[in-house]
Amino acid sequence: MKLSIVSPVYKAEKIIPKLVERIENTVSKISDDYEILLVEDCGPDNSWEVIEMIASKNPKVKGVKLSKNFGQHPAIMAGLSQAKGDWIVVMDCDLQDQPKEIIKLYQKAQEGFEVVLARRVYRSDTFLKKLSSKIFSKIYSFFTETKYDNEIANFGIYHRKVINSILEISDYIKFFPLFVSFVGYKSTSITVEHALREEGKSSYSFSKLISLAFNSIISFSNKPLKLFVKFGMIISLLSFCVGIYYIYQALHHEIAVLGFTSLIVSIWFLSGIIITTIGVTGIYIGKIFDQTKNRPVFIIDKIV
Image (cartoon, rainbow, N blue to C red; front, side):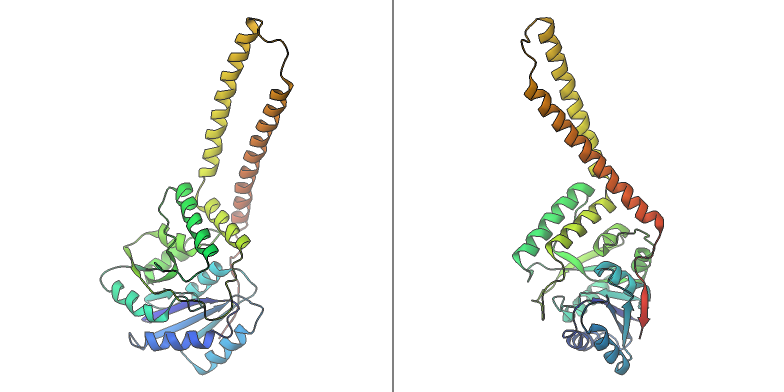
């Protein structure tokens, strides 16, 4: 197959018909040999019923229903596992990723690139979402010592060998853009139009965004542990210097009354550092535990 379009679907029953129509209008100008994979992430609305109805009438549409809500990025991985195209487009279902931009992505890929990413220079998102995305990119770049571009998300076109490499990554925590960055290959980006949401609002709450950012950093970097090691060594060095100073004072009988305040502050400060360090270490051990269980990150219930 020439082209596969993969889109995770969650609470989008009113958008799906428009999404399919616009994709077909665009992709048919490239080739008639394509498929549209809609991965329904077990949302609370009637999205799956809409997908079933469309798939029963349109042989180009393939519906994949997950057994429960696994999240956007596991849903993307589920769609990629079913895609058969030589080129795979990944896009969100809310029509903020404009299907008409697929032509530009495909044409750029024909210049010899294996990954062409969509860069959203003018993002039609809320101020909070744009701000949190910018903060995450800075923090992630710092902890992983890589460059992460917050103007690039899931939308892009990928060669089959790129997707095969991504599917081989066995990390329990899935985050598609970081996987794309990790596998490498010859890549570029182009500027695309980013539209307002057609219906509803983003299913990502602020707490979910924080959780996704935290899990991604923990999964892709051990720098937090290294920072705590360095911090501990600095505290130890300072404590040694202070200890030498107090010994000097004691030998010269300059200490009249031992300081209760400094003692209590030191105990609480060092205890806080110790507890935080143990907590961060425990989080890493917990992620190792999740990884070693080797549970599937998605389970497919139905395919139509």
